[in-house]
Image (cartoon, rainbow over all chains, first blue to last red; front, side, top):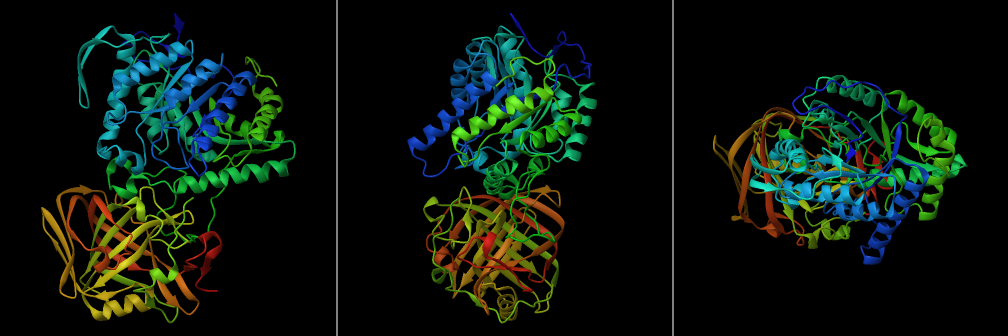
Length: 391
Length: 247
């Protein structure tokens, strides 16, 4: 039986987290599968196979996680609509790196909870107990509207999913009578390797969702780049709240990660030119998403994502403005990146995930070279007792 | 990123003519703003926009009506068809159709903010259970939208994207950024149906085809049309084609 890598308490016991970082800040790579036009099988296949090569290299170099998002219909921005399939390939092509399902959209029109449980357990078996399960509710009208989802319901269904999934994984025959779905007594199979179940996370785009994560004992998987001050506030509040959490199961995942970009090159000027091109391209693509509030007024989506476009008139609201560069971006030579990461680490983050490319603006060989340089020159500054890091 | 493919000439059929960009702010107290978000057919997503604008995914349009009991030109109502888009990074509604029930207001909105305003009958009937917007042009009904079952929202829950008009200006054809602020006092979401829409008669580009309404909202408050700050070349991306009105 593989133990869950996070702190466990017997079911029914109120959890009191130990606020210690067991090891240095961890690093992950994060796949959106952004894809340039034209959307031919050759182009889409290249993006997928490039990602798999990055995952294999990340495994070899000592990165801790490889995450894949779930998005639907988001032309160019993300063609990662079947992450469980991508991650199955990653699982069978890697040996050590943890497999991040980041994240499963927890609305029944997109994913039935029984199917989520089955797929995740299968991934955990395929990866020999390396799965991390992210949960989310989707934030664009493009996706919610495409599946005819009522935006007012998604917070409720997400909450229901995260409470039910642990039972489906851990228990034998189980019945359930709930809000968004019900089932007679059945044994959901297979069961995951990690006992009682894999670690669970919540993707955090909007301010406040980190509290939902903390209150339920779930990891905080940041997917929008907050600035230093905002991230520090969120991180402190998360760890304060999780001390008194009422966890969804006996597993508490007390982790906070943020999302960043990575392009590492010996020459800072070269890094800036290529890396900032990637950052700007991502910003443009992100600003063109149709966030739910733009189409459907609702209290359930009160805040746009941090990287969302400005919708209001502001004193500097010129349409000629370009995407700003978020704080602490990991684009530069190794020294620049080490300095940025030290500052993030000092905020109490337990991990940082990196976007490595955007619509293939950076050639694959350069992406792989950037990863190797990062592992060789940056990782050792954060790995006093880590495993596997090396060039 | 996709961009529009329409020629500027194609989009100028009802374009207003502006003598300058020096307008002052205009405050419209007690306004009711009715907004219906609809999805439109993918076939028209690029053909309905100029090269300087990017379509949304999915392609979409907002029908927006203002009922203004007080204005410098007296009470008026206006109904607009706005193709939703992005100008640079920013969400915008490109006004293609605009009908106003007060000739003085229509003239001022065209001359000062570039609205492609035509005079017609615009009626916004607001009840406790239902709201109806009708627009008649040359005696023919071109729009009939009904919305039911209002659900109260917070004042900030309704998102209004910025407004772009396309007008003849002293600098040539320009997309004019119309900044409107609504100091919202009350807002509701409703469920919309659209028994009648004749897009071409309303003034929309022929390639804009409504597929289904997504949502409707009704907001009440003080609406302010701000002085103009930016215009954009319609055939150039906003990153390079934006000009300050002060230049």
